Length: 289
Picture (spheres, helix red, strand yellow):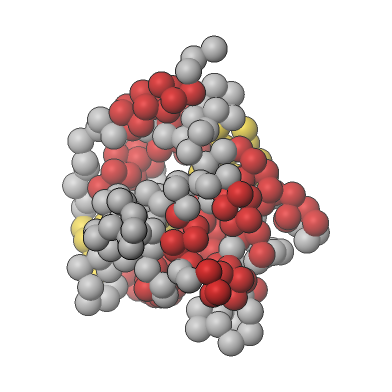
């Protein structure tokens, strides 16, 4: 059996080896440099195509931006889908206090951005991609971006008084969450991404209150079709995290699809050179079309 660490390193190297793909258009949704969306037009000359909203991962940390998923965005566009690849504010570049790495996320900026861009996307897509049909929107995200994708679909069930709460369910065909950090309790217990969840939510005394507004496993049921795609050999966001979310959904009376991929780790899900990426594209297409 391959060494898990070696497998993960090889898969990460493959996923990050593709050159970034320039978008067909880029539009801002705010004044901050990170408040932008890259748009990729569907290939094949379709007059109308579903819109896929793509939220990148990287533990909500600043060094990981949308550029690393642009080959995946292009992969989806080549399959006839319109793609909106979202950037958002992440943790600052400076190391955390008494730490060596950048902090995960910004509170509340990261969630402000996702809420703002989701609300603005129909208008932005109409300007940038006339082919995009916002009535057929699927949200997808990888790792930390999977958490944000699940959260974007759950804003109508946020606690009363939340600034991000919607009065009704968003008009989505569904969510495809790729190895998502979908259950904060399990992720914290496994120290996923070096304590990223705790950094995202800030001070320990604020954890419970903030988690109630952001933990996908606490925001169920949503009534929106949801699928989790997970590699069984994932050592970055282990299978147990996604399974905990699926179990939480079942307890809430909702069925969430779970696609487990054998001999697959964390990064093949967004690697156009990997078979797993084709499985992801098919999951998205099944909801979108």
